[in-house]
Image (cartoon, rainbow over the protein chains, first blue to last red):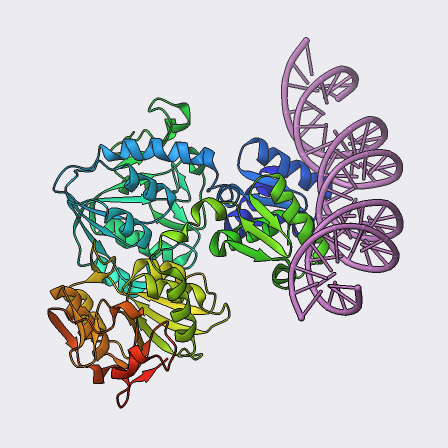
Length: 248
Length: 248
DNA sequence: TATTTAATTGCACAAAAACGCATAAACACG
DNA sequence: CGTGTTTATGCGTTTTTGTGCAATTAAATA
């Protein structure tokens, strides 16, 4: 087996299970531990995964770790401020959940006038602080992990909505693989959200770039705006400068 | 399980419950106490949590935990503890919003197993901290005043539910006028909630007794339980000792 | 104060990683 | 073709890391 094939195999395992054990790979690929370690090291150097004692974890897994730290917060405020320029008075906006979206809501100008649909209770509570925003909370099963409503009932209701703009966070975005996610239900949810909105803006910190997870939400073409904390001209965004995708 | 995964697990627990017990983690993760202690120590070194005898607390525990602002919190905790006796495993419970209900949710035993429908986002978020509770958030227009969902859509959905018990706070209760309220929409909402539940429990602090407001929600006969912070034998409750109304 | 419960410390052991070295296949090029 | 070079891999040996055990100390509780 060629090195490249091994690398691909490892990355598939990572995307599938979020983790690999060195010992498992030794067995599966039938090579020495050293080879696996070298492989993992090389993938780390390429920034494709995260190495720990005993194996490796997916990058996204790792980054979900320090979400609550202050450093990420500054980036998120930066993202939020950029995203605000997308909101015009009178708009109907649909939002997901997550810390980035929440930060966005907190940064909104006080006098903004709009209708917001959201699947996140926390976002709803935050939006309620604005006098001229009408808030509609989309109900359904409540996910303990993601802190948003999900399930068939939510999807049905989304299908009855037509929003001008959908704002969502993401755990992974990739130039060719597009938007991907790990959980089936969240995946379905995001698809439905995108489907019922004229345009979609993805808010994500740069750590989430160039990652692809196991379930596909939509191709990059379905997204209208990509908002990161990086400067518009940053090299990391080069691969995302495609037709129809506005970067800010 | 890799060390990093354990750390991640612990942080999740901390973010969810604001605290963890060493002994719980030993069980959940199936490792020795020593390992858990070392894990906790390492997370402390990284500044991610705060260690105490018996377990650890979230770092934000001190700063963000400002419950002193909740009016009459002690009374509400007392009410909450009494109300918990009404909940049996397997029940389908419907709750409203308000600080009393929120306090009730916070006091629930950790291992409780039930299905909760709620119109309050904050209650939903709080309920999500219990592993064995299924949470369904009823969606609709979001009221900035009451912090609950309301409107036709909510009423429609309530009509499709059959709950064992409805828990609600109230702004007024009166021996002859029954439950009353000031706002039309909230009034409609409460009617619908009572209608779809086999039994209704009203949680209220004693100062709401003997008050009657503009709009009638239901007669006192429609209520099964009245829960206050007062002793069962207190004179203030004398007028409420009517047939079918259990006072506790 | 006594008693239980948790935390600390030092130690041992196994698993994994790192490092240097040897080997061999693949490649480059006159 | 032959020879030097690069690249990929595996084998020992040494370090580091992760974990559990036992004895002791400290803390909470009655």
